[in-house]
Picture 1 (tube, rainbow, N blue to C red):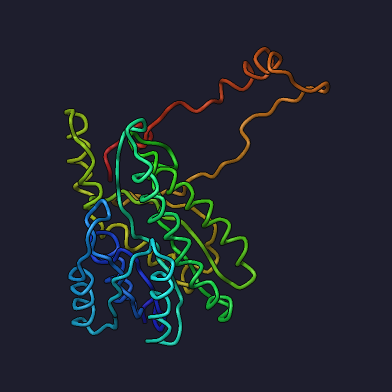
Picture 2: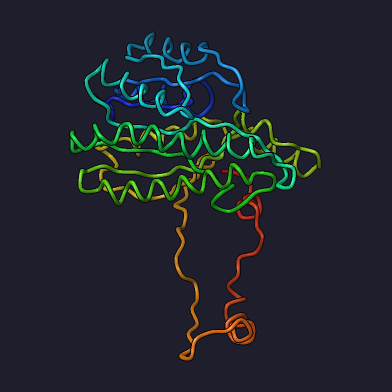
Length: 304
């Protein structure tokens, strides 16, 4: 028996890359899979049903069950239909894996409103739309789970990705809130921060020698390395006590990522002024300030 036997799973952005590997592995573990993919380019333009159909063919040829959904997670009605397709076909929905995404990298002072809103809509609002659509069924079933995809661009930082970082850090807050609100219905919600070569990562500029070397290292990290963790988190059998957490995967490494907690505190019985903050609080707190790190600064060693 697979760890997802009898379960119905929606995987968004499942036509290529990480989503494709998750959908195929979920099916191998016994899940019936809604393979969602708009088939857009890395910036979210255009549509092509071919990649999702190809994944469905792979699953069916291996004896599994899967259907295509070509909707956009950025449209609430289409996100609802993804969930409804699962319920109409198999009578239930057990897991939503929010993987769909786009990139529109720009340095902040050159980022347009459209670039910012488009990325936030696909990643953050898209994750909300699909999750909210499934929540009513999870509540009725008294079971279900969400696996959301975040990024170290939001958790740590990166150049030229204020839209992506804002959306991905917002997903962390969304996931934690879902975990808190829906625990009473035995619903779990977790985040995965992947390190893997994909179409989206392939759009990152590599202008310096250091950047080119980093890209070459990233090419070694295939999307198939991410799928086992996502499938584990989708399994009530294996991960029934795991909720509200953030994991990162890099090749054969798995990390439990930190969440915001107080580092240091100062109190002053008479209260604070701007000047006393500068004179008293700042010297005490400054040694605990975080530097302006990028993801590559924290994960500075080669993947294992």
